[in-house]
Amino acid sequence: MTSKDKEQEILISTDSELFIVNTADGTPLPACGLIGGTKKSPIPIPGIRAEGFLMQEDNVTLEFNVPPYNDAQLFVDAVGLAMQKLDAYLSKRAMAIHRVGGSLEYPCLKLPGAESMYPDAFRIGCSPDYCAYSLTPDVPRENPSLGPTGAYRFAGAHFHVSYPNEQEIPPFVFIRLMDLLVNIPLFAMDNQGLRRQIYGKAGLFRPTKYPDGSSGFEYRSFSNSLLFNWNYLERAAYSTMRMVSWVLNSSEEAAKVFTSIPWDQVQTALDTEDLTLAYDVYSMLSAMKLPNCPRQGWYNPAPPKKAQRI
Image 1 (cartoon, rainbow, N blue to C red):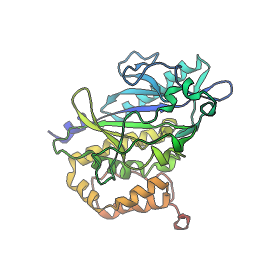
Image 2: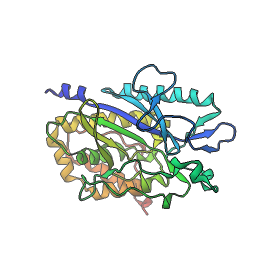
Image 3: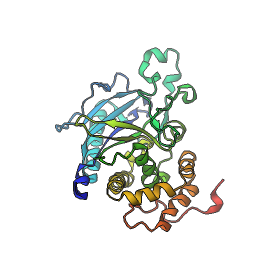
Image 4: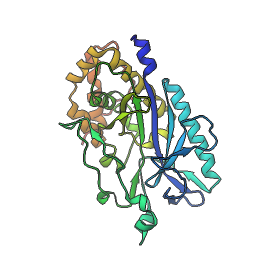
């Protein structure tokens, strides 16, 4: 299989979560009973005839899916179309998308009887995820509990990627490289609040099997903030596709990076939102002289100052 063939077989999609609010006063509204659709039986997004554009209720959020694409721009356009149609659907019902990502407090969940009124809002973690930095990355981590979240709930933009994997590269390798080459240069855009401590940690993923028989991964560390910043979404999508293609077609370079990077520092930088440490780690790639490595420009025009580290 040629490099071009492999690129054509790399597909990207998303399941992304949106908070919805009352148009009149901005009050957060649990999606429970307002949207329809479930994980097992999602429903089409109104106004889109193409297959694969689906929506459902997930905890308090409206979750939507787009079909997989082998082109990053087509993927970005599909997300834009889905968001446009969801905006229109919600506006007719006096609801709107809450355009601040990551974490949101739901005062209604503090009210007496809230658990019986919104039972889905008190079910957290539909299925376990995995951590690429675990000593056993093929063993799922324990599901988070509701205890530390209180009335806060969280929204992510999970990237699904499938690819030909004749080399049988473990998913956790791709996930660590996602952290380094995609998330680290962009995460200054993604202030997640409480979500970072629970669902936004470095290296969170699920290994996946898709209906067409292909395999891949679901990258879970992004919040849904990227849905509200087109530059962020485009860079994340293009960088993801380029990273996977690079691993498949330049495996020696990828192996050099994987064995040279201090992964404990990558994990700490993301988990603590330490921008200076992130920049220091990312800068190591420059010294490695990797002609094919898909490095992207740092988000901030100037690197953070050393004195900023706490």
